Length: 226
Image (cartoon, rainbow, N blue to C red):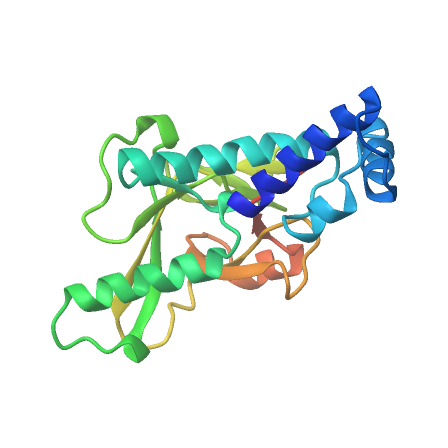
């Protein structure tokens, strides 16, 4: 994160000097200026950061990511985590599994698997962290709706493409058994482009229909819908 902030600061400082005529306008600075004019992300910024549709969305995410890391560093561990704000969400979930494994004597990391519960609360309703695991917010359902009272998948409302779901409690359990076939294993992706590079993990969601119904719909959770 410091690398991204330093690159942005250096580029903007140099651009001001180049526009004033204090330094020469290099090819990189000219490209950055053209990208900003067109609301595109400069290439050398994108190379060390993340994908985004416009420069405005990218810069908003920069501020929000930095706010989460800064709060964590200086004010203590957050009660709820914004999964989109991590460069490596898979590593974050793996670290949580390791933390839970160390807290239980005799547990082996190979036998500890991710488990989850969808709460009825949104970010502002959470005042304390969970006793084990993490609370995650900012996920959107693509292809289905969400029954907040019943905590289950339902048909989406007309003309509603994405449905925000409440805070998800993700934790780890010591289990060698298989998953419950009555639950829909919903994949989480960083971006709307669903590829193996944007895949994070799977969470189990309750459903009255057969899980195959939602598989055929292509239902997934997205961290970013822009």
